[in-house]
Image (cartoon, rainbow, N blue to C red; front, side, top):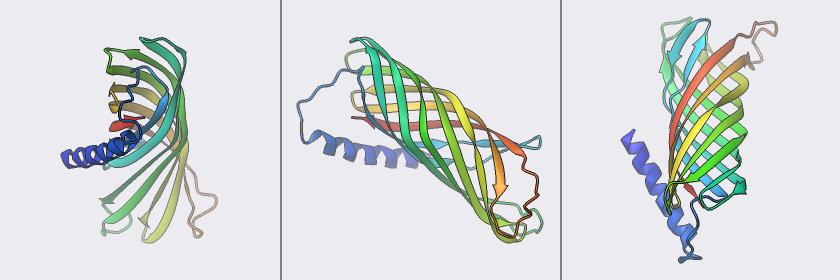
Length: 212
């Protein structure tokens, strides 16, 4: 996990330096609109048919904007929208129908993650952002299920609080999302009348980022 944050910080630092080259002397107020980029790691857990199982950590990237409509030098109220948040994880789990372990690749796609936001300046360079995020979500898991390759789709909505501290352009934050996703086997050989059971998810996430 430390290696992940070191790599994420290095990537963000390079982007920060590149963004500052055109206007080195620009100093922005802590309470402001802006484009943000977050690189994070999530720790999802799934509850299915009464059984809760933690999943492997998920690496993700998020790009969005925040818009503050009622704004002063010290605080602002507005709206944030992430144009996308994309995550990936892979895990090896015990076989269900066979004794052979299965490797599963999961892609987490969230488009138009949005919600109200309140920002407050803690000093001339530090700000705190608090928001409630709502994110329509599609997850796709591919792997060897029941002895054959399959693609399973999960659809649903996540909602939860998000807390972010910003120092100048740097940001560090955490969120806790809850959601219910319904699965469907997209394999052409699957039973079209197969029952779909919803899974409850809890998804804590931490991230590093930049706000431009």
